[in-house]
Image (cartoon, rainbow, N blue to C red; front, side):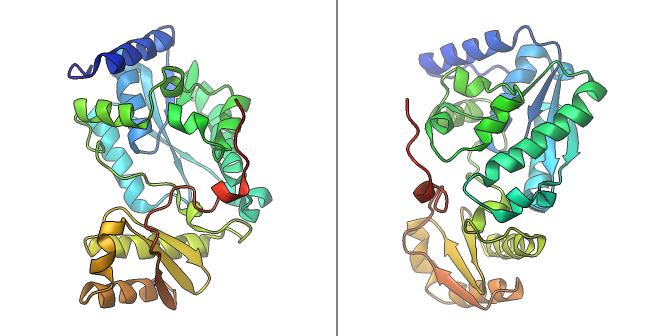
Length: 283
């Protein structure tokens, strides 16, 4: 499954990643089915052999059912078995409080469960996750602190593979998720300092799933109490203010438990809640 149709810099980075993993007897990959973790899973399986790699999928109310099913499909395509790891971040007061460090508590829960419940059971000698080089430079990724605390490897970032390079490799590998939009966890749709609850997560999941069934692709439904604030790519805005899609979208979000649908004219915004609250990372 080694990608061959790559730019020279990407080939060198892939070779670097393979070398970094070469001494690993049995690797667990914290896996979501997104592009980053899928590329890491595929490259690890190629470097070590699929029988020496496990996909570790954290399962909780913050993981949408569609994302869970898609992750299993990608892992099957790669040929690596999936171990679902139940997590209980919702039992942590600091996670529910939903400060800018929410992702730390979520990742800490996942890596703790992996360390305590999975590593010895499956004989893992290392665990890795899909942080890329661009993520490593962003100030709004507190989950990286949890990875460091648990000695979790980040081979993509260490090989200096950024988002664009990861996408190119995914396409060269013909992964089913190669062109999949980014899909942060459902909790990222709730404004910081507004409590994360299973009910809010379920509302967001129902609204986003229903909107995708209307033909929308990349989107976020931000939870503002009675108001669902919808973010879509700017080029899709005209269709959403025109019938029949306008009426259909309103019906979907009302069925999910919201009273109002607001359309954000700024479009899709990665880190919209967190970036304004964190400082710029030094170095």
